[in-house]
Amino acid sequence: MRRRTIILATALAAPFLQTTRRAAAEDSVDVLLVLAVDVSRSINEEQAALQRRGYVDAMTDPAVMEAIHRGMLGAIGVTYMEWSGRDYQRVIVPWTRIASPGAAHGWVEELQKHPPRPVGWTSVSGAIDVARQLLAAAPWHGMRRVVDISGDGVNNSGRPSAEARDEAVAEGIIINGLPILDDTPGFPGLIPLDEYYRRNVSGGPGAFVLPAEGMASFAQAVRRKIILEVA
Image 1 (cartoon, rainbow, N blue to C red):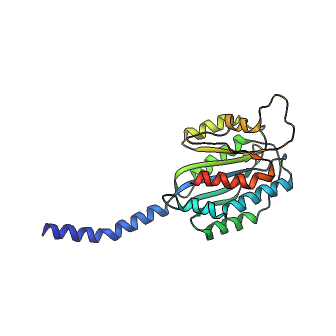
Image 2: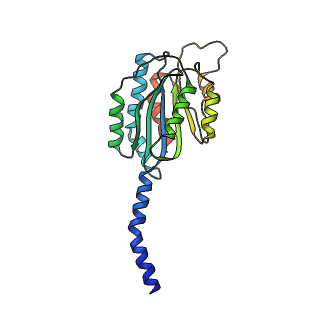
């Protein structure tokens, strides 16, 4: 009788457990990813368009979708923001759960509705601070929380970027950098931009910096970077 009772109880509980697991999976994602994209004055309209194209092509790339599907939950949460000076951070596409090509294409369609508008100074610290707020307000639990910062210059507005980076890392956030390198002469005494990103921007377990050698290679760098971040 006791054995029959246990079997019956297990059978009755099974649908509930399956529903609970399914609900937990829908409330979580493998990665919460903030794509923070530089639109400061140093990036002209043509460069801004190329930068945007890089993210459009990457998010719908089959290799990126394959990397998403290989995750434990097979889903990521993504939001896209543009930033420049200390007081300019604009969310272009709010948090979107991507677990299928259809969701990825929907995310891209929303992104393409809002043309980039280069403006202002360069506040990497401001981008990090707003990215932290976005992660805190995300509608799902992320097994990892990642901020992906792309830009073509050093922090020249707001507090030091390393200070903002350290506070984010202390909260368990990973910050990866995609510095855009070009032939434009820098200010005397400044370290190369990719080294600046390594010292002052990236941080957290497994964080990395993946430079793009100018806008021509930006799309390829974005694709590689997103695959690394969601894999």
